[in-house]
Length: 237
Image (cartoon, rainbow, N blue to C red; front, top):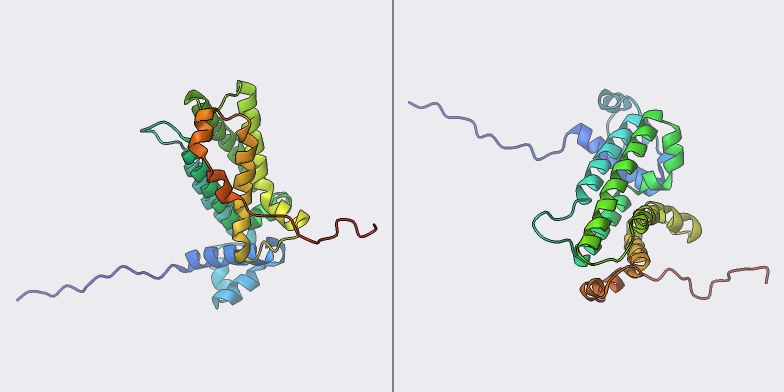
């Protein structure tokens, strides 16, 4: 007589901790981190605040965990292929993935100064993250130069590395404040691709004919009109 073993099925339901993180990110992105409280998060999940505090001591701990995951994702993207030369198609795809990653964590780039002012630990981590990001971005520009795809001095490669990151990380703020786009609306996600276009436009001046041939009309794929037709620039006139 054999003892029947129970069928073990993997639990496909996310844990409460994962649900807290997922809903928090969704609410932060939609409403802005400042106005979302732990009570809002608990209510959205249908759990008690005490249950939430069992997993996270406060909202800052939730933000820190979301940031760490975002950091790991971004750093993983900033790695060129190891089995072949880096191409402009690779670069464009990498920029698109970066833009998507920043959009998915856009609450952080919307309220960066406020969030970092609330946590010295997170502020120090963000500084170290940038240092690593800059080093990796510089390596990418060096790879493009080595492959004969850009013609730029060592200083120009450093400048491009700074400028590309400045554009991408400030793009959400630009959309929200200057263009007054509702970045809480997921339907506006397409506008993030214009940030990719801006980086490629910046770097075009340094691209060699080989690079331009590789890029072709790929940059145009990321072009999204920002201009508001028939909008008065200066009502006083």
